[in-house]
Amino acid sequence: MIPREVARFHEANRQTVLDKALGSHHADLVAVSQGPGIGSMLFPGMAFARKLADKLDVPLIGVNHAVAHFEIGMLTCKAEDPVFLYVSGGNTQILVREEKTRQKSEKRKNPSRSKGNYRVVGETLDIGIGNLLDKSARHLGLGFPGGPALYDLSLKGKKFIELPYNVKGMDVCFSGLYTDFTRKCEKHKPEDMAYSLQETAFDMVLETAERALSHFGKDELLLAGGVACSKILQAKARTMCEERGAKMFVPENAFLTDNGAMIAWNGLLAYQSGTKPLEKEAEPRPHWRADDVDVTW
Ligand code: FE2
Image (cartoon, rainbow, N blue to C red; front, top):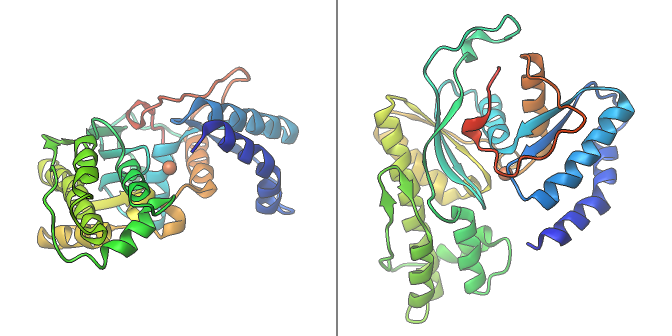
């Protein structure tokens, strides 16, 4: 993706999308993805949201994109206290909610959800897993986005080709895996390479997810992010969970890939529990991590 082109695409389409979504409804709150992400895309998004909030004379809430993925998953799957496996183009993280009991705010609506902040307990040390899959699919000439095409191709794979399996404690890294994948593509069938790449990369993230389940004594796993649409990842995660008596939750695809509902829902949760609306001069937070979000809900 070329950031400037994406920004132009957003600019050309945002009003149409907004009109279609709002219809004749009135909005009492505007929520916007404030970060993380690429600054040149976040800036126009925030400016657009600010203009809309001012026009409607309603508050504007800044939402963390990653946390919004988790919260829509919690809402749609009804999980209670899961380990979160966040797998998308730019991100690969394992998270839990902190155990410590935060001071209960009077405004907090749902006491059963009174957990602490999100804590990242494992993550990629280089590229996101979705980035790995897209790059690898492009290398095989499958186009973008690569995940679905790579999946289709991998179903024909029969032979497992060994690739670097890089798990370092609770962290993973994928760039060495990608380099070796491109080398081995010269000698092996594309379908075997697609199959082996997915097996290796998914096993890596699930190993760390399983360790988190065990270490934190949790019995639920919630998948989040676009890569979690993968039926292979879902099947592997389900098997791992079943084998240890845990439950596996996965939202439907529309709530796994980026969606406006997750930003709206997280904005509502935050606003109703006392998160302050954004000041006029608020700026995007391109490097805003999930563990830096002050969870008020
Ligand atoms: Fe996302």
